[in-house]
Structures are given as C-alpha cells and as structure tokens.
Length: 374
Image (cartoon, rainbow, N blue to C red):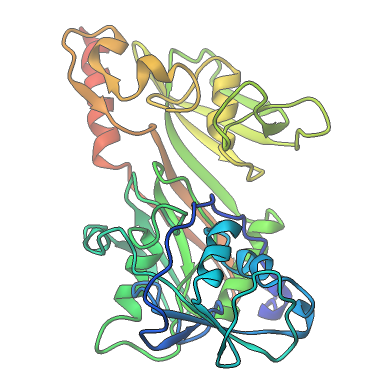
C-alpha cells in the first residue's frame, strides 16, 4: 500500500458551539495561577478548574470588543455573563483592571479573566467509566458509556468524558509529557460505543480531516420501534433544523434550502415481535442522522426523547411495548456506535474498531426475544 503523508490530513477542525449558559455574580478576583486558554497547550488540563484564564491577543483579533472576543473564545458562556465579570473588576489587561466590556483589543495585549469556581461537583468526573478499545502514541479509542456527555456544555463543565480523560492523562502524578487528549469526533450523550480521541495535536488534524472528507466507515446498532419489512434499504433524505419543535437541537427532514444531503443504509439484523434490531451505516454525519431517518420511515429508535413518541416511550416501560407490568426497560435511546474503520496515517494501515453492544441494550433485546417466543 502506498504510504500517505500525515500532513495531507492537516485541515483545521470546525467545532460546533455548545449551548449557552446565563451569567452569574462576579467574585474571587485573581486568586490563583493563570492558565492559557489555547487548545493543544500542554498547560491546559480540563480536569482542573482554573482560577484565572489568560489569553494573548493575536493580530487577527485586534479591534474586537472585549466581551465579544471572550464569548468567541468561551462559547459556553453568554456575552452578558462576560459583561458582568468585566464590570465587576474581574478582568485585567496587561496587569491593569479593565471595566469596559466595549473596549477594543490590540494585538499583543494579555487578558487575565478571573473565573468563579464551578457549581457542579467534580466527583461526577470520577464516576465516568473509561474502557479502552485501542491505544498507541497517537490515538486513544474507547467504548463510551451511555448517558455521558463527551465535552463540556453550558451547565456541565467538568462531568464529561473529556474531563475524565484529561484527569487520567494530565492529572496523574506520573503523567507523560506531550500528551494532550482531544476529541476527534463526537457522539450524542445517550449514545454508547466507539469514540476516538487524539493524544497529540498533529494526530487530531490528520484523523479529523478523514471524518470531514467522509473517508471513514461508521456503523451503528439500533433497536427500532415496530417490525421493519425490508431486509435492506437506503434512506436518502435531506436533514435540517426541525420546524415544528420547541427543542433547539431537534432536526428533521427538510426539502428546502435548509436541508443537507444525508444518507443512511439500514440493514435488518433481527426482527422481534414489536421491534427490529438494525445496523445503520451513515455516509454523512448530520446531527441525529440515524434517529431522524428511522423516524422518517415510521420506525423511530426506541426510547428516544426527541423523535417518535417521547411522551409514551421515554423512559421505555414494559407497558409501552404492550408487555405486562410497568418496569423501566431502558432509560436512553437504543443506539450504539458499533464499528469504525479509519486509515492510520502514522502507521500507514487501515484500522477497524468494534464496541460490543452494552448491557442495557442487551437486556432489552432479551426481553423482546422472550416476548417474540411467547
């Protein structure tokens, strides 16, 4: 096989912005050691809340308002939150307190923003289970547990998977130098299974570009509602923001200019009495793609809080499937990232990673099989 140059995969990532969080009262002005806010910086440890965030202004950011710039750098906070921190004396520029959120920045200036301690307990980080599938000097592939956020959002800053990974690799006393764990791709909080992270900045760029160029193969296992008649089908329907939903992140089928091309191959693995186990291979990476596509053909993922019939099916109870009793069978959507194939440019070989079906979905399958045989 002809070797590829890892530098071919060097495009910058396009990260989505997490949800906003409302601001709070300012306090604790400059009590601790500053931390550089720069992805890939060896000093950035996401398992330890910083007292002060330190940012050096680059040429491209010169002329921006302070509050707008900080919002761009830390999108999980609102602009109002930053304005409150600044006006309360929690920002220094080149060592002097700055009180005006509208002040324009100049290249070379050093910003030091005092931040309050997190409201959430850091003990939640320790409860996250990390099960490695594969690891080398460049990447870490894990079997992500269900119901765990992969990265911080407005309300959850430290109880996420990336925080726990940082604690393992950057917070340990015997930590190795030069390891800076970063997500290469993402899966929903409730979805379990294969998740890839980089351990070096150059590795992230090389692998992430393959996701952007759709050069990877990704397969999921899902338990869909009802019996799907076709052994195999291609769902080729455009996806965009949902028009009839109050949920900001909800997606739907869109045939207008807001709909982006989306393709999912669906293969039936096992038909049960009231559900179907399917393997879904996605050829595009739209938000909630499998969940939206399965809903579109009338067979939504079981126990989905956004799609299908969440009022009746979330959490999934025995009575929702017509069984005797009212016990809870599942508390998250029945979707699992089962398989990932990707080229390893630093080893010059194709890699395949598989995560077995988790216990909660296996338990549901066994219950469905018992019902089918009765």
